[in-house]
Image (cartoon, rainbow, N blue to C red; front, side):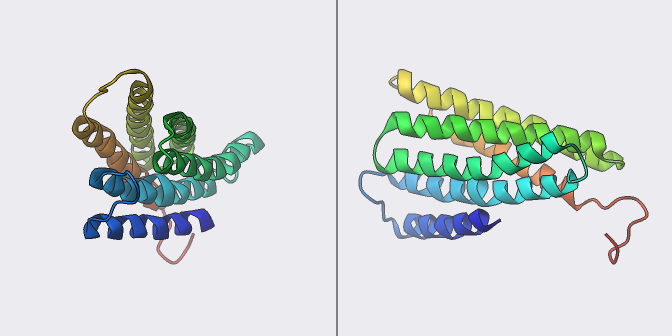
Length: 192
């Protein structure tokens, strides 16, 4: 959770830079805005979701608890690699970060599937399963785009990528948050 809060501050700084029209080094204004968005979603929101889904699955197997324990720090390292790759203009470093982030979010999607199966509430099952599908799809787009950046002079347009990948991430995060807020039947606001 500490990393999530740090990423929220970093995302806010990037957002401020974007609104001021300030771009460090060789970065475009679009890249600065995308950095702000990624630190909020891939940084802050991802850490919160991993913690929430982890709490939901805390009574499950040791193997699942180990996955939860690995995803959060791995995602923190992944976003740092992506940022460093952008700042230092090192496409291979950025690609390594992208692949690590894809693996982390796909792992979260897998945890959402397990949470869906473990949920007694029909709405929570549907929301977790939908979140898993959308998050995994959005991250497969990110992997394809990252690979294309390394190999093809002009991959899919950035506008198309931000629309498809960005929308998938926003929807996947929202669905997961909604699933986490559903209380078990018979549980009122004052009881866990």
